[in-house]
Length: 114
Length: 110
Image (tube, rainbow over all chains, first blue to last red; front, top):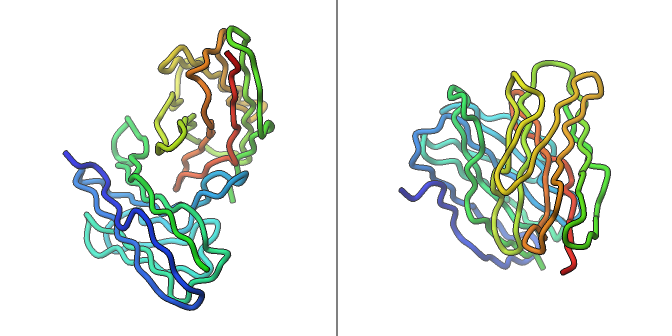
């Protein structure tokens, strides 16, 4: 059981380049999330998807787009990367219909924008 | 929008000292509350959670947290910390989405 799989693990971009971070979960979860983690700021929610076909902005959505391709996959796209987007990105999933609500995290993507 | 505040950015303790990490949240409705821990180089792991019932919840590794509704607080405690508790601790609140506090880095000196 793989859980939440994120790719790539590391990425270096130049300012203005674009890229897509991929996330897939095999737990049949309805909700998926993208967070960024920066020193001293904790995890900040970028976008989330409560169910297939829906997406909503979180705390820091500017400069990002997301796609909930199907129930398993939730991708995060940077159209024109900026140095301020240097961060560690985590995808997570959960099933809000279950009492045992908690997040399952991917292993993270370390992104550097030069 | 809901927000989560953690009062301490960095806490340094000696082994066997008692720990209390503060967490306050702003949302007034029904919330689910969590504490997560992140050990160096790893992703977040759930320590404990509160949904309803007894406001004193016990988690893994001897941690506990008390939900005080009137204070919008959910503080994390441990009576006696160990060197292996060195990590970053995050409080989180779930309503329609999951929001995290900025985290508290705990350093336990042997």
